[in-house]
Length: 211
Image 1: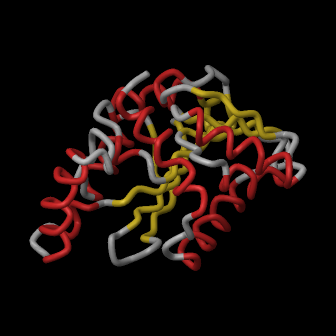
Image 2: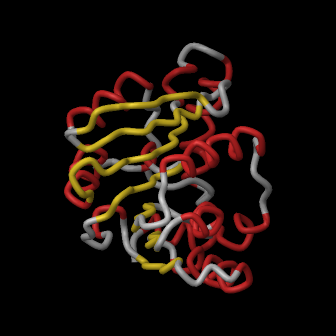
Image 3: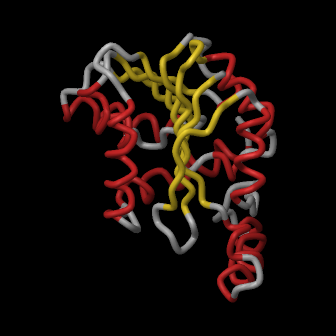
């Protein structure tokens, strides 16, 4: 078991009870994602956590394969899917780079890309798992955009200390929007929609089509 799997397993009970920080931003991004999906689609979600997004989207697609490296997170997700009657959500425990091969009509990655030290490799894998013309839909906290602000210095000082105390994952990238979008394009995607939800971090919402 990796250090990150242990970390997410440890915090899973608390994470499952926590509220969404910006409900309006989450709902808006969720609605935009829903607008791109069809009833016949097979969808892959990377880093699904406790399955909230997969369950929300399940009624509008044929199937969602929801993956995460934390067994404890997935246990919560399976219980929630059962309670919601979302029988077309299938949970797999694996890293983003070891997800099922597909091919899929869409791949989702919400609040994940800034936690990947192998971002370019994972994005190449996303492209390989998509059908031609398939969609990659992500939302990423771009901490690099607040560089120079008091919030940036708080994050940059706090995260290493939290990591030492076992309260942060092993890797957090202070990525900015330009570098994120360049990496997505390099992996063979055409970006067709972007937005910041929420705007203050920002949480960069991105929809890209495989060329």
